[in-house]
Image (cartoon, rainbow, N blue to C red; front, side, top):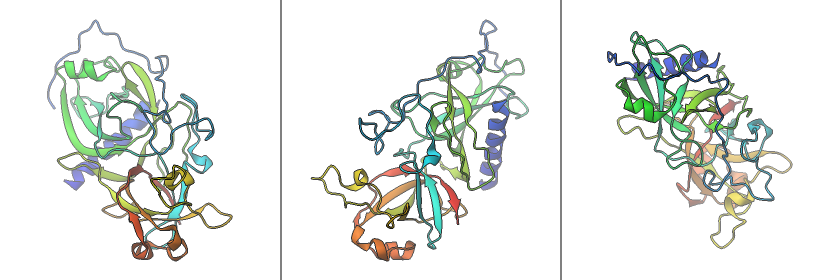
Length: 315
């Protein structure tokens, strides 16, 4: 099973690269005209609206990017955090805010021989702010006929109305949808850091991919979780709106080094970039330097959120 998941994931990676430049043989009606991703309308994307954001919602004072404004995730907080690995080594991870454990579908197109359909870009049906959106996508393999023309199908409704075979897999990929022109150049492995194009309701979307670990959703297609232990400048207080996340992560004086400790790294079997957040008392900050010491700190709350924070650097 693991080998099959890995093979399909490799197909997904090669398909993304191809897009940037099974036996059902039903034919899409010839009256359909392919769309050109280069000239098709772009989707309006806002990750920081009230509907899309949880920990990162734009206000008049916090300076978070406007809708469709490119996001530079390399600029540091709140988008890039420096924390600690289980053994105490330095790690960095991007912060893509709270995400659900319920994955959303993404559709990849293949011909009858199992090769990616050249030029066809993937299809999704939700973007940030839509109900059911998630950065984590369950891969669905679509097998098309030999007469299919790339980008004739550019939305989920038309795909589901076709007779093409759709195979749900247990592969879950981390591909945050962002405004065109956004950047996030850091990766643990030597993988592509460019933006990829996809279809959303006949419009083009852009998304990153993070493949530091192949995720297996199993039979439920739920995104796996891994724990993280964090502390804030002000301990969470339900009577203080400026406490907890609003106060920012506690850091070593004069630096951006937090003592946030992740419980796994990409080479671990149980690693996931979707972290279950546990908050420890900031009075224990100086005593926390690895996973063992984090476990000995006073835990104020467990499982308070699930955040998408792919590890992109390890010391």
